[in-house]
Length: 286
Image 1 (cartoon, helix red, strand yellow):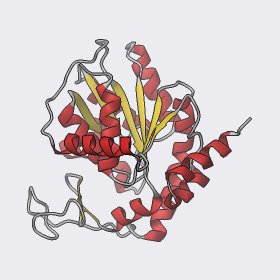
Image 2 (cartoon, helix red, strand yellow; image 1 turned 60 degrees about the horizontal axis):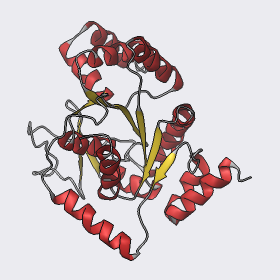
Image 3 (tube, helix red, strand yellow; image 1 turned 135 degrees about the vertical axis):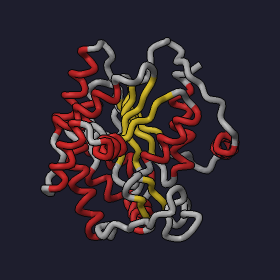
């Protein structure tokens, strides 16, 4: 019988040499309960698929709001820092009637609006502490209470305690999660994105010098305010952040894998991954 670790190595090796680091760190890929979709090889059907993907990426989408079974989609999107979660969330929102919720955006907005939870979060940040799970759960609960249809969450949960709190919250309303997607992108690709990343801190808008540069170098497109390059956006700090991320996320992947709602999508660019995500959602929406 092939072990899970062996299955994992075979999947990542098939995806490409540049993903060898992931083969040592990501468990669970390649099992039956966790389906994994990756970019195709260069066969004739793959060429046809590539043409279909290009048409999809270049076509103005018609927003689809209704799921085939009438049950709203309640989905998480997971992935390492720089894997493209924000990019994919934005594209999904433009094609499907799904509210995209970023925990970071929710936190920043509540701090700016000085809500009770936002004030407590700001105090934690001022002390140099991580915002507590209780505060984050409270913010997410309030956000979800404003949404009546399908939604996806980006950036939450980050650990098992938050996942269990989210499950309890949704279970109390008889509205459990029904999809979790995980973005698998090679380490070297993510690193190149991180190095070229600039952020407008007040809004959280992210730019990349290669594929999403600001109209004016160093300046936010919306406000005209200066952009910042995080001092820890460098190879050494990035490796440490990835290790911390995987230490927290591996248990999450196993947690959702056991519920048979986890699907991983692999690719070296957002344009490779998004058509896979689109087809996954296309099966669920009318």
